[in-house]
Length: 111
Image (tube, rainbow, N blue to C red; front, side, top):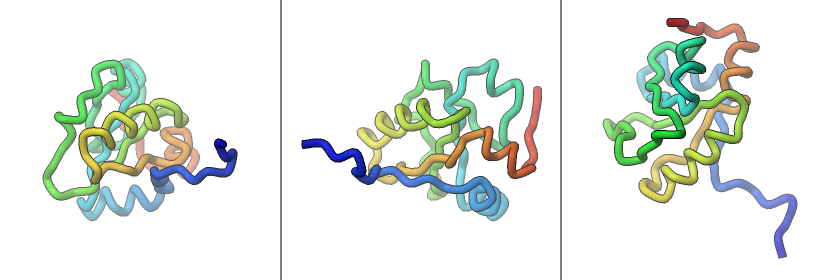
């Protein structure tokens, strides 16, 4: 029987906490939105790896925590599923995605 209250095995990190980790160079952010979404505004230093071409084998493995980001939620969970199948050290995404980052007033880069 499935429980509606089952805890996700994935973690969410708030925008301000992520900003701190990025500033300390303790994390790397992988943005799984498509290229046009990334170009319209992304977190400084984020790596673009659209879900349509997402390859867990290409995720950074340099000792920093890998955190995934998206627009609102669904795609980062899909990417987390793929990444977790390949690497057990990837289990975190940005809570609320880019929307939460912008609401927090944190910097956004546009191309």
